[in-house]
Image (cartoon, rainbow, N blue to C red; front, side, top):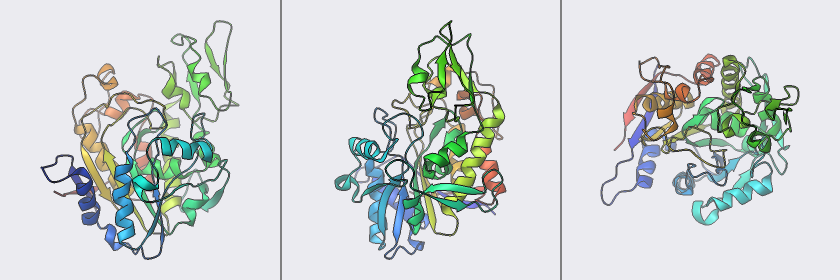
Length: 375
C-alpha cells in the first residue's frame, strides 16, 4: 500500500505565514493521533554548524514544540555529537553552537539536550530488528529515554549518502560518536593525487589525523586510521577526494536505514521534511554552497521512507539553479522517472538508493506514496 505523504508549498497570501502553513500541515498529517499526554517527545533536529546558513531556523522548531505542548507533551530539541572536527563534537561546544544559531528557550519554547552526553559516550545499545549490517545500534541515551520521536529535517544533498532527510537525521544523527564510527567505517575515501593541490584543508577537518602529505605535497589517507566519516570529501574544493568504491555509499545508506529503524521501533514517531535551501552538502559543514534547485515546500508523514522518497522525486523533477554547483556537473545520471538525478550528478560516487531500498527491505517503511496537498 502507498503511504500517505502530506505536502504544502511555500506560497503565502497576505495574512498567512509559512509557520501557520506548517502547523496546518502537521495537523492534517495526523500528529494529533499520537497520545502525547505527559510523555517526553524528542524532536530530532540539526542545530547547524556555525557558519552554515542553510540549516532550519528555530522558528520551524517552535511550531512543532507548540503543537506538542498543546497536545499535552513534554518536548525537547535534541541531536548527538559529531564525529569530525568542528564546533559540535562535544556537548559544551554543541550547545554553544545551537545558541549561536538561535536555538534557545526564548525562541523555541523548549530546552536543548545533547543526547549522547558531554563527550558523546552516553549511549544505549539498541537491537536492530531485521538488521543485516548492524545487529545493534549505539543511540544517544536521551533519545532512547523519550517516549515519542519526531524528526524535523532540512532536506539536502550529502557527499557520502547522496542525500540527507528523515532517514539520515534519524540514523546518523541519533547515533552516538561510537555509532557514527560504526556506520562510517566501511567506506574509506581515497585521494586522486593528480588533482590534489596540497592545500591541506582536508587535514584540518580530519578528527582522526589520518591525512598526511608526501614529498610532492599531495594528500595521503591512512586507511587503517581513517574511520570513513567523509568530511574530507566535502571540504575539498578541488574534488580530489572520493569514496574508493560506489558500494561504500550504498552500504553507508543501508547502515543509516538500520540505525533509523532502531530509533523509531516500538514507539510513536512522526516526520517532517522542509525542502528549502537545498544545499549540495550536509549542514555539518561550516559553510553552505548555493541551493541546487528552487525551494519546493514542506512534507510530513508517519512513514520516513515514503517521506524521503517523495522529496527525492520532487527535487529531481525541479529545474536546476543555473548559478549552483549542479550546473557545473555532467548530467549523466537519471532517476526511475527519467528526470536528471540531481543528487548523483552532484556527487557521482554516491547512490541515494542505498537508504531507500534498504529501509524498505528491513520493513522501516515504503518507497511508494500518495501525495495529499494541504492548502
